[in-house]
Length: 210
Ligand SMILES: CC(C)(COP(=O)(O)OP(=O)(O)OC[C@H]1O[C@@H](n2cnc3c(N)ncnc32)[C@H](O)[C@@H]1OP(=O)(O)O)[C@@H](O)C(=O)NCCC(=O)NCCS
Image (cartoon, rainbow, N blue to C red; front, side, top):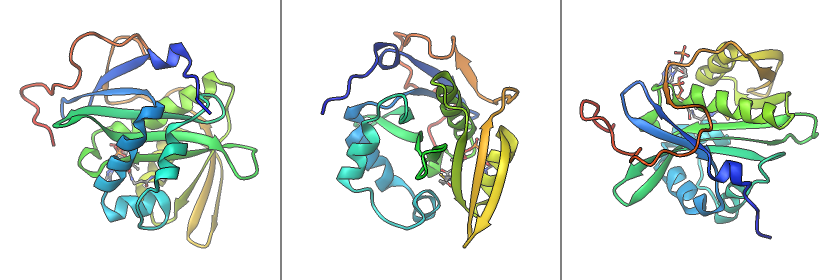
């Protein structure tokens, strides 16, 4: 079944400048992102794949299809995109969807290895929580490998955690959005402002692509 992308989402996006000076576009996911999601997953290191999916494997086409086709309400996803040699490529994804018991919105987050530590993960987390709130979703959850200190620290610093439980090496965290998070990225224009006409993919001259 075709998914209607709300016009306000399809046409809305924001450009942000990461800590390395490179401009990245953050926008709602679209059905045509399916091959770009597959390509992103192929580029991830085994460690990053393991931390995201709890096993080292490739994304199946049917999974990419499901991930790229959301209803923009109960299931929502944002992507971060830059210009690659063969057109736009995805470097990060944040999503939420109903948890198994339906009580919370489960968060999934990944940033391509070469783009980590530049503030993108924090930005995507903040933006997906904000998108959720705008749709009346206030309670989020995430299952994280207990050894994945990076994400656990990220959640502790950037969200309001209400519960944390540990079982079989997996830490389950319940949290809400924190209104006071300050991000170290530069937004161009208003959040979710209409796309700018200028080429957002071009890195600044002093900032080589990683
Ligand atoms: C978690 C993840 C999304 C963070 O993305 P990111 O773009 O690196 O995030 P940021 O640059 O905003 O950094 C977030 C924090 O992690 C720290 N960090 C990031 N990469 C790090 C690394 N390689 N080593 C140590 N710390 C690191 C940053 O210093 C920052 O901490 P701070 O807020 O105290 O400064 C990314 O590491 C990732 O994709 N991990 C694999 C997938 C995963 O674990 N997903 C979570 C389960 S759904």
